[in-house]
Length: 204
Image (tube, rainbow, N blue to C red; front, side, top):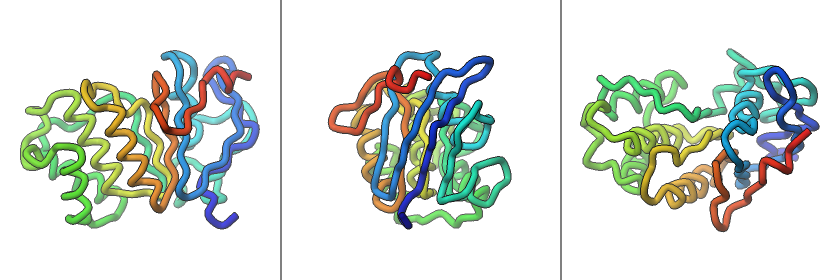
C-alpha cells in the first residue's frame, strides 16, 4: 500500500547470536512499542532497522527502500538512541538548529513553540544544555524528533532520565508524529493504551 512506512519480514537480528525475530508493518498513523528488560535485543533491533547493523536474515524496507548509511531514504528516518549524549556547550536552540541543518531543513518556528510547550521546555530554549538535568536533556532530544517530523521515527527507551510524566511525554510524541508518519519505540515496560509488543514474543 502507498502509505506503508516500515515493512519488516522475518528479520533476525543480534550480535554474536540471534536475539530477536520479527515481522512488522507500520503505515502512516501507526505505532508500536517493543518492551522488555535490558539486554534482550531491543536496541539491536532498532539499529538493524536504521541500517546501522546487518541482520542475520530477513529484510527491512522503509518507504519501500532498503535502509543503510548514506542512503537517500535515511533522510526520512530519525533515530534517537538510548544514550543521552549532547554537545553541552550549545544552547537548546542551537542544538535544534544544528540537527535541522544536518537534515537540510529550516526549523519550523511554530512547531518549535508547540514542542517547547508540551515538553515544558519554554524557559530553557536559550539556556546552555550543560545547565539542564538529564531528564530535560532527553526532552531536548525528543523536541528535535518532533520538530524534524520524519516519516519514520525510531525511539530507543525515550523516557530514560525523565522522572515524572515520562509516559505522558511518549504518548504525546507518538500522537504528534503519527499524524503524517509512523513511530517505533522500545521501552523497559509497556505504556498504557498504546500498541505494545512484549520482546519475549520476538524470540527466534
